[in-house]
Image 1 (spheres, rainbow, N blue to C red):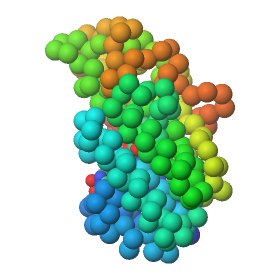
Image 2: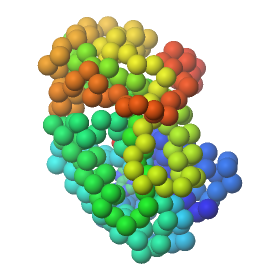
Image 3: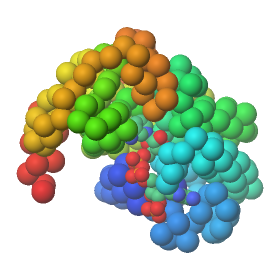
Image 4: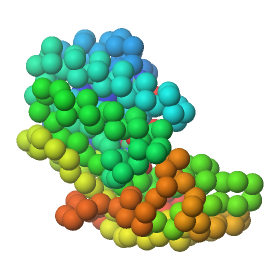
Amino acid sequence: MKIVVIGGTGLIGSKLVNILRQRGHEAVAASPASGVNTVTGEGVAAALAGADVVVDVANSPSFEDRAVLEFFEASGRNLLGAEATAGVKHHVALSVVGTDRLSESGYFRGKIAQEKLIRGAAIPYTIVRSTQFFEFLGGIVHSSADGDVVRLSPAFVQPIASDDVALAMADYTLAEPVGGIVEIAGPERVRLPELVRRYMAAVQDRREVVADPQARYFGARLEDDTLVPGPGPRLGTVNFETWLARSQASK
Ligand SMILES: NC(=O)c1ccc[n+]([C@@H]2O[C@H](COP(=O)([O-])OP(=O)(O)OC[C@H]3O[C@@H](n4cnc5c(N)ncnc54)[C@H](OP(=O)(O)O)[C@@H]3O)[C@@H](O)[C@H]2O)c1
């Protein structure tokens, strides 16, 4: 199959392109770096010519509220429109577990808009909602830091390694469209401050971690279960310790 991976140069996209090629498919890594910009529409029609499946693992370069919403709305419209013209048979997108519960957050309003466009289009689809990537822990610390204190909701998380995300994306890409949402998560559920303490100790970040039920996650208040999947998610196999050992070994 010809499979176009939008965001194919990113963290998940680059791993996904490799897996799809290893499985014998023609996988095209499409992104602004290769002249394909889904926000402006530049290069999209040419990239999609003859494509069977399109996987969208792009992300907004800016996390500012308005920028994220504009990114996912423009990108979704341009991409789904070009897919209809090209006769694409399956649209696969990567979203986030709990997206529908996170509308207080500007970032997640962007993801809600992305999912809505997919559901409203005529292309058969699979929306894969993932929990937080271990690789994103540094981003969570950064966004929650206030001077020497990192203030975090004590909500549960069930983070997943990007390797497991890419494997799951490859399997869903090569399967029939689900016509709905599937959830993927890591093997262990833990409270966010506890995980971040372990992460910060490992990277020798000595700032204090404070559990605060009022602390917001990218602008949204969290309940205990906001960020964890419902029943029956596909689980990755890589836990925090294994991920940490691998990521430190590759440095
Ligand atoms: N971080 C998490 O914990 C988490 C959890 C669940 C789901 N997700 C979702 O996972 C997805 C992928 O995340 P990631 O961390 O792999 O992203 P990433 O590493 O930041 O990569 C983003 C990709 O998007 C591409 N891109 C940016 N602007 C574009 C445009 N205008 N047109 C086409 N492509 C564009 C980039 O291309 P260039 O390299 O050319 O700039 C890059 O390939 C996101 O949709 C995110 O919501 C993330």
